[in-house]
Length: 515
Image (tube, rainbow, N blue to C red; front, side, top):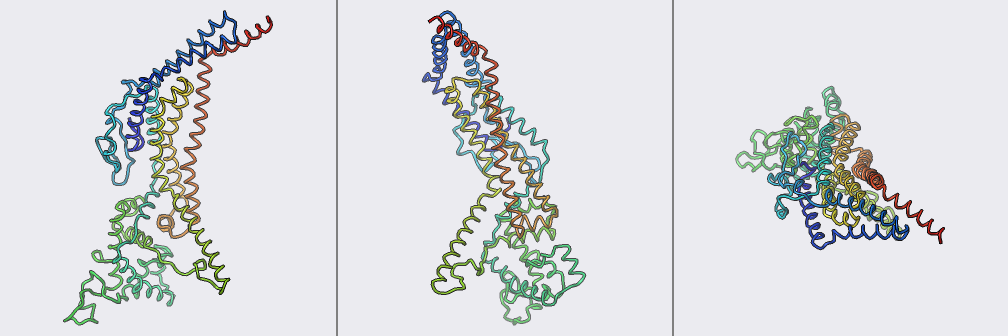
């Protein structure tokens, strides 16, 4: 049988193993027989108290016969584990969703450990776990329906996964951070200053801005500065740069008889060199911290080693570098007053600033990425608890047919969450691509999170409510339907209950008349 996550392989085995243990305990202690005793007592007492002696014994016998038959039916079908409907450990498998690196993944099971969960913590499960036939049929039907629906739905690009990878990258190497800062100071700042000072315009610059966007000049890897004469090809590093060899023809300010250990490259080569270039160092840093990120970028139409691909990867590392703060009006002790007014102003600004940071942190913590990781783990754990506690529920309900139907629909509804999450994910991806139809805009504004923060917050909130709201609404609706269905089945299958109630009322009225 196919399940919906690797964790569910273990929770299914453990849940039904606990079910079998609890059922054996209830059987050995005789608790499983108490509902039958309750059925006998109730169906003897009620007719005997309300109906004359003659009809009472017949009604009591009929009610006992019917309710005992119903209870035995529930016990055989939904309470007693059966060897014919047993779960075999290696027969439960999970098929991971296709990825770019593995478009046709093979199913995994306990013998094929292809997950970070491992098996060391799950060695106490049994190889074969017996299960009641009713619950086995519910699980088989639910799993089959889930995978049939998912296979029929179109697959979307996993943009959220790309965003998750992008946020994993941080510029932690202090040497690389220093080199980025040096490049910014020696190359980007003078080039940008010259660009605005000279008000540079030309057909080539206009072409580059149209191709790479007006924001191209807002980062150190700007194509305008790299491909336009007089910018990166004219400026050099002001100090020797590590790993760059001394060049006697370039570094003429040094004595060739006593050269320094490193040289001072021109900015264009310093950025673009395929062996020593700063961009290649940033890409290597990204590959170390988020190895799957370059693969995910292929979903956006990039090609490996293309200029656009390298620029996106390098910008990801630069945007996630440790932030630096500048003075602002909400900063503590940055006041425009003196004396006690300054103290009051500082206190108010500190409170407002702290509250803003707390709210921002709270909103940031509830991201779609966290939900996508958390919800599929909660689902199998909830199912495990339901499986393990079903024996007690069946016994306390006196083997009610209504409870059997309702719990079957409940398990089906929880299993169906997988389809609802897939639907929410598909809607999420299409909303993102509809709001950012251009690849460059999508990468710069959504993936790299450089602007349109309000739009992104609204989008994340709406899709987050879908991930949570759809399963909740579905479970409530199906739970209500399950209760109605169970009651309808019980009512249709218990005509003697209505006969006994009518007979009781008529018998009581007859006794009152005689007395």
